[in-house]
Amino acid sequence: MAKIKLKKASNRAYYGIITAIALAVIILINIIVSFFDFRVDFTRDQRYSLTETTIGFLESDSLLTDKILFKIYLEGEFPAEVKRLQKAVRDKLDEFKYYAGSRVEYEFINPNKGTLEDQEALKEQLFDRGQGIRPVDITYRSQGASNIIEIFPGAVVEYRGNTVGHIRFLEGGQYRLDARLEQMVQRGINDLEYKFMRVLAKATRQTKKKVAFIHGHGELGIPYTQGARKNIEDAYIIDDVKIEGALGGLDQYDGIIIADPKKKFSDKDKFVIDQYLMQGGNIMVFNNPLSINNDTIRRTGKTHSARKRTGIGDLMYDYGIKINEDLVIDANYDPFAMPGLPKGFVNWYFYVRAMGTEHPISSMVNPVKLPYASSLQFVQTKNKTRPSVILTSSSNSRSFGNVPLLSIAMENQFGENPVFQDDPTNEANRLMLGGIVEGEFQSAFKNRIVSAYADSPDAILIEESEKPGKVMVVGNGTFFKNTYYDSVFVQEENKFRYIPRLPRGREIDELFAGRPIGNFEFFENCVDYMLGESTLLSIRSRAIDLHPTDKLKIEREGSFYKFINIAIPVLFILVMATIVFIVRRYKYVKK
Image (cartoon, rainbow, N blue to C red):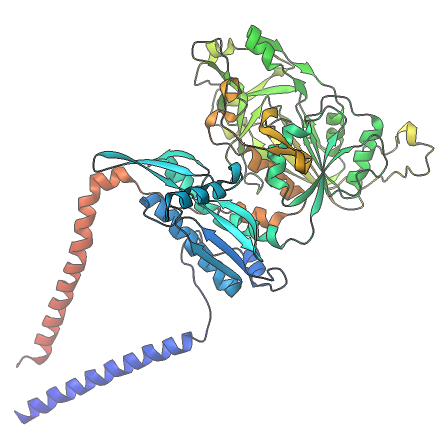
């Protein structure tokens, strides 16, 4: 009996020592690990990690030199979709604080607290006449009743005591708790790092690059480009320039934009543009080679297209991109407003919703609406350049003739779901609508200097690139054009200011028919890439796959998964208890 008691005491001591050693090892490992600062992200898309460029910026004392405060107006009781966005914002800012320390601060604020007067004053301040955070109304059903909740999904950012910008996590508008809202939330979460870094870059930027809108050849007027300018004016100095044959007139600019020219370029102006490229310039040409009159279509139901013959296409051809004088029709299209028709619109295959490619400019951008787009082709040259496609039509599209006739009668032939190819799923059917060539170029004026400059001592021809340059061409010049009445002249600023507004009447087609488009975002990416601001572009092109919840599957199979979640842990405990019981019985029972 004494031997049995001694054996039991020995076993207890043995297991006690083993337990003590295990606890000591765990404590020791925790102490050692506490001296090391690291994080491990096991998610496939690295959703909880920042890009290397962001980390470098946040850790740099020379770039982020002072405290920056994010005031997040996403506090309160929200539906699950909005809570997901709220949590993602908090997690992302915690990541920023991890690397930047006390230089990044944030607070969550409930805009629906306080007196009614205080709430209204704050919301008016946040809205900032449409330039700040725009409210979102979400309609949902609860306990058989329909409810509407108003949220302000955005942030006000302060740096060195001054407000330096607003961030919108979601665009304003009216939504329901459906798949569309989930997509908006997912896109908002995807863009968090980019939006935070964009405002940080803006607040800390010490110098700005210069970009020029070229005029003098019928290009888009200043009031019509205010929407696009608004997207880049915080990051760049924007000028409006007439070349007028001035040698070196573009040398001070990091990039130039030629938007929808309608008149012929003189040889002098083309020479100045050419020599600008030879010095490492960056040229963006957004060009409709054909002229189409929408008013004629609305009045008569048809119109002839006409060549503009500006000559800019010839210059682009020498650099490696041919602009075809055709029109692209696409099964992925937008409608055209026709007030005289019973339904008020016609299926207009010429309003192409162009698709992005894997290029960082367009990889994460919504479809870009190109009204009356012409196709492009890369051509063989002696230039040492690298071509890239940045926009294409869908696989169910084709080129519609050379300088064709347009007629609303096409709808009778093709209908709402047109088929333009024998195999509409063949990716080879895609047509290039936007492309870039970058590298070293030969001058388009090599061996043929402009006669007006032949005897000028200042007209020194640079025959080959002294620095690498870039040429971008999009077969449409109006995709970022806003309407004239969206641009309001601000007297105290002595310039136009773009005021977004809802579409009214016949403007519905020009304002993109209410479907999500990426026109302004695509334009902004073009400028960032061409002027070398690729840091923000690499962040924006990053995708996070959140796999939205399948509510129908939950409703259909929810009970099964609840049972599994409850039964498996209980079953595991019972199995382990049985195994322990059998082992102990086998070990200690008298034989």
